[in-house]
Length: 321
Image 1 (cartoon, rainbow, N blue to C red):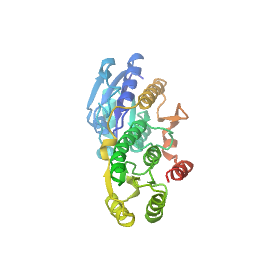
Image 2 (cartoon, one colour):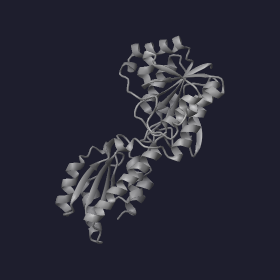
Image 3 (cartoon, rainbow, N blue to C red):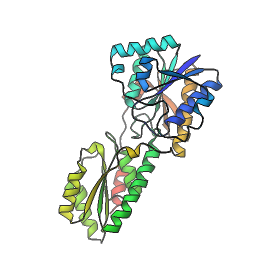
Image 4 (tube, helix red, strand yellow):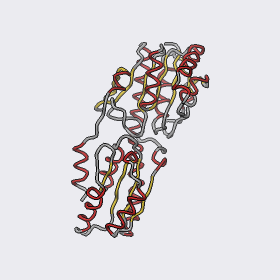
């Protein structure tokens, strides 16, 4: 291929810039022209491109977010929007596209691939919910951010004998909540993959630990559980007598400098994606499996399923009493 494009789509994730950097520099070093697409698939429709070179991506490996910006495109989801994007690619001579994002972004890449524009997807999402991947770019940074924020809340909870009910991200997946809960010693962890009963899994657990003279508590709730944490905090306080405060961490979890793991994995994946396109291989998703970087057919990848580690879930509650 002579010319490729790279875009970021969906929710931003720390490490996306490191992936962009790797794509651009790998392409440039191999004589391939590379365009950065501004604001995801909207930019692909409207021809909002910038030609990138080695210096375009200087000093971005340490930055969170994405220098190419991100957006969810309603127009791209239509057949007419798709055709516009394809025409734009053809007008600019773009022969392949690297798409950095989550499942929704990969569906767009799949649709482009079906229509003759080879795409390679790189998994970038803090939720770690891409089925074909053990690990997605941004997850480690987000997890460490949650740990730091919960540790800060723990300090004040301990000082005042309080309970903190903390909502973390994870609309459809509990990986962040489960691992953060273990790292922070949460008494209860509520995730969407496991059915729960507030009385049994929160109130009774707290009462059991109260009998062992524990006076402060951390409860971690994934947003995908559908629990109103203000109502949960009120119920806890009424039934246990422990002053309880709800906290929604929100978008503080998305930003910040990416960790070493996210920078290194993003770099490996970005380099790998360009090497696939250099060999005229498209319609793929780059994935991590046991620290290796591999690739899957994009159609197969989207049909895969991923489940929570129930052994880890059981361990979390066994050691948090």
